[in-house]
Length: 516
Image (cartoon, rainbow, N blue to C red; front, side, top):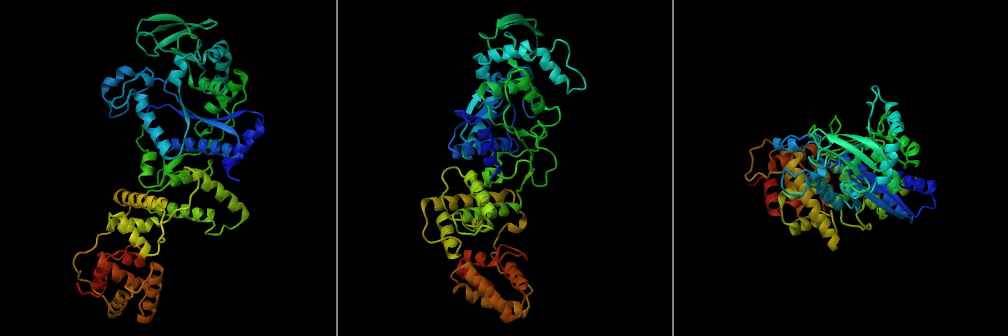
């Protein structure tokens, strides 16, 4: 059973009579939401979809912590924005001028990426919730138990929090910043003074200019929304981290059993050593992945065990990811055998979790060949004709087949242009090169030229190549190198048989016969 299905069953077992199960995720939209953050998005989505598969009523809440303060001005943004440090990111203007606020600029991008990857969550903005005084009762509980909360936090700290510490931050009604010192007056009333000189007193059932600090807010959200599942990164699960303190605050202050909350490992680009960080500038985004991976394959990459670090390649490893996905797709539709019953069940779950909608069998042009083909023609119909000639796809194609082929060709070209090593790049020589070949190589090339017109597929031509090397007494490598030198001016290239069939027949026959 896949881990997402296991968690779904555990959620139901813990609370079998609950009407609607709640899966929660969230982030402060104060910078680029990167592919590492996306592990949490998809982990929650997989569990949410597994609950639905179990026939349960469920919802996926995605929380924007956009009532958090702006902590610093990122690189590349005008120094003018220093004036907004301490203001909620939901109230900070968008430096790029394309959205209503700083937070909306980053949130909107993730929403777009989520939709492209089949994630349909209910988005909740904390700025709206706090301004509507949605958490007034939980805020009163936190304030009345502030010494207990401080004791929980201090038990994990080397230096205790200062006397008078408060579990809330107040935004000044005059300057809009949280440069305030608050005093709890009992009930629902708070008094504050701000560094700007302003002071005030308010009822937080009626005015929403106070918010709970992160570790308290996280715990109270679990109770308020009835959260059943929320995974989080291993940094949150460090000893004394926000998970340890949050679960204690949930139980000991809000009298609520915290959700099932496994830890997930970090995501890296292949070869990357450090954790992704927007401030460090070593991030790649879901949009970067979608330049070269189909949305279903992006989801597929994240279905691995969540307690294992995930390395995502942009080099030749991309071909392996496509090949692995295509293999489980064939297995799912019964076109390729699965080793055992256990593997069958896990494969089925992985494939279904990878889909944007209902599973549908489609053409599978190999990504590596698409990378070569995309450099030879930009015409999709011509590319389809070549794929059919080489035997990579069938003659009868559905609308969905054509859509996948067109997408895969486009993504393969993106990969070639931005990430592929030089060995993948194809530049046909316009003129016959001056190459030094043995007589055996020349004879083998001449026979190969004659075989091209007879070959009905790349597989058939491959058999012809094997027979030619045996008859002419040349090693396959010697024939391959000779052909690549004549066509590309280098000793390596794409798989020879399908490559030759993807070229203009007259041109390739003439070149292999060394006639120009």
